[in-house]
Length: 378
Image (cartoon, rainbow, N blue to C red; front, side, top):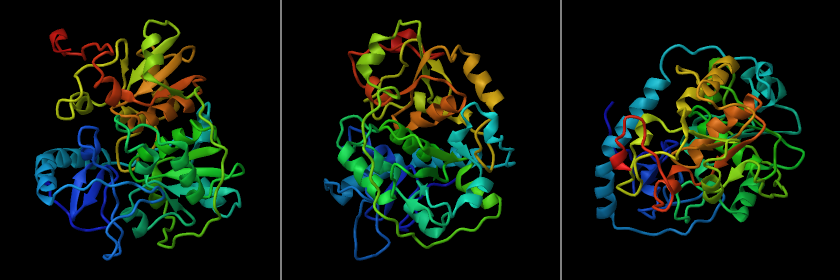
């Protein structure tokens, strides 16, 4: 796959951004760069907009930005090829939601089609704005997953504050009476993060569309380009620390036999250093299960069967009797594993919000070598 710089305003990929006509990998928003993700409006006269949250921008020269873009071309190409490979091939077979101990977290395309007119249903599309504008599930509201993270935090990917999240809730039209269904076209990665965001703020009436947009299209259901008008939402947001944990708590419980830590980074993500900011290694005692193991490879990224998911966790000692802490390369990446564990009925699952973006950059936090990594490189 070749890499190029795109100037098409509506073609922003879920893990990319556009700025001055260039399509760039979101590594630019990592802490060392201090750049903010912005989305271009399709209207040529409007330079930038954020979906619901007002963002303070820092401007750089075009020359500096172009230089960074060139340095990132290879990583963009590799990432794009990996996604294309994973979403190629046979579609696979979805498991019945009822087969999972906590199957209410998943709905099928058939179920969603049958309930589109339910007055309590709120469908939210977490894909890139360009993809949403090209066609989305009827009645779906668009939210940009980057608006769920705090862009001015020194640690990339951490949960946005309540004022920003309240704005998203308002735009999405979510109320305490809503039954929310989330989807995207990226294997439910961004949808899973927003599900966790809602859970972490006390809202649990939320599910994922199994297989995302790909499943909807494969079943022959129609897409629309019309954006719905929805009444403003309202929720009483309150952080739930049963599903959210910080670095101090993780560090304290490293030797606690009642805890187990899951590192869901892929092999490529384990090698990421963000230009030397992140150390190579892992949290001591963590069990490596990549997020890619949560869904089926192929044209439609259905969640793996309950039998397959259960085996993957039990084989490395991640058992339901323990409190499970999940982390990824950043907090956003951890959510899909959180959903898989909750699907299996694990009663105590927390996302370490700072994830490796925080732990790997903090010299005072202990690390262990990765498999096949010499201890001397810690």
